Amino acid sequence: MELINSSMETEAYQKYERAKKRVKEIKSFHTHLRIFLIINILVYVARFFVLPKLGVLPEDEGFIDWLNWNTYLMPLFWGIGLAIHAFCVFGKKFKPLQKWEERKIDEILKKENESREQKYE
Image: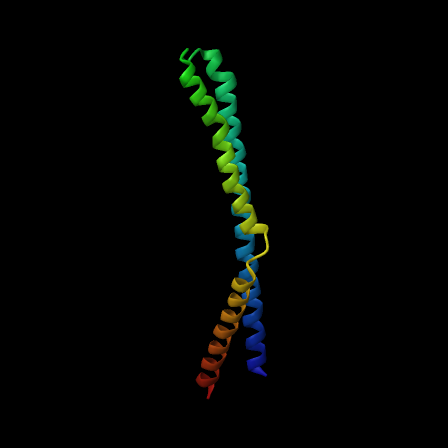
């Protein structure tokens, strides 16, 4: 009976740890999203409102074009990275990897149970 209770406790603990890991992943994505929004809003405000009013921008057309391209491309590429992050957090896991994880968890549980049984013998 003790072995069953021990196994149930181990399973409950593993579920808790998986849930804790999942919450950490979701929190990490939300932090990434907030930083993305804040930085890109600041870049746009600085580029199109602050710098022109301060007269800091030179008259060189090449520099202005370079600055504009960078202002538009930075959120594009960062957004691609953010989308990949979102897919990793919220998308379905790759099936073979998920099955491997489950098999590995079962294998570790069996070893722990066997070592406990030997310990009590």
